[in-house]
Length: 372
Image: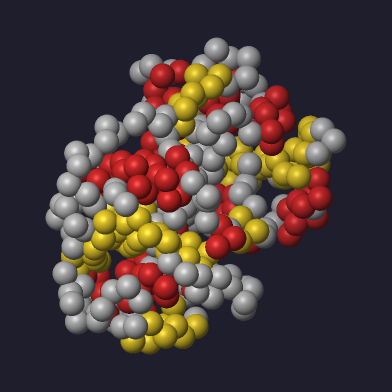
């Protein structure tokens, strides 16, 4: 936990999931820069978009605002709940709305963390615009090194004219005001491509990992998925668009499939794709913190192409967490199939949790490991 000084008072904030790296904070200069645009005591309804760890929402709630937090991330939602509680702020001061739903207007102000995905940004702006009356300010912010050069163009197209702030502590704001012109038509931003050698099309909603083409690591893991494991309970962990789980379902007609991701857009995409591939077949779909709440011994096989970053922070903490969760969820004798870059050294890290780790596939860049 670390202390953060905001224009609305001091907050005690932490990242979620917790990190062992003491240099990582639950906020950055872009968060503080955006909060400086809000004046304590003005109150009102504020829409906060892509609040990574709840720092924006908690500060505004402390300032007496009624906050709506709109995000695609279940982990961000958990961080928000945790930090509200740590700062003795009422949970009902902040309404969380997932990315597949729409916030209820009207709102007086909008604070938007500009995401890495321009498709997600355009989706959010286009769906947001009809909810805003004329003259509402939309304050979009990011650290300079993560600010996409075309973010301002999207803001102007969907919201209205904008001005860029001076840089402050390596962050910048793009401040737009809604115009009286009719809102542009909401674009169809869903992408589609074929799951290798199956004839199945994978649809990808905005913000989903590898939405333009099948990820290379996933492509290497697909041939390693076992065939004819009867009624095995198979989990596609960090499922994205569901490619691994759909291949597992194709290989194993009697298997029970479970798709899990922390992204609401990913789970919605996986559900759509599974329904299109296997009409009438049942599967489970969960937005969750991995297998944290899974019943021990509830899985026979876990398939995972783990992320190597959370937001813009690169590291193996998320992967290690998924490995540990998988070990707990697997039945005795069950297995985790995982793919990763060779240089990440997963073969060593997996031995912290599994008795046996063997290579079952790979290429010059990626390795597929079976941990049991």
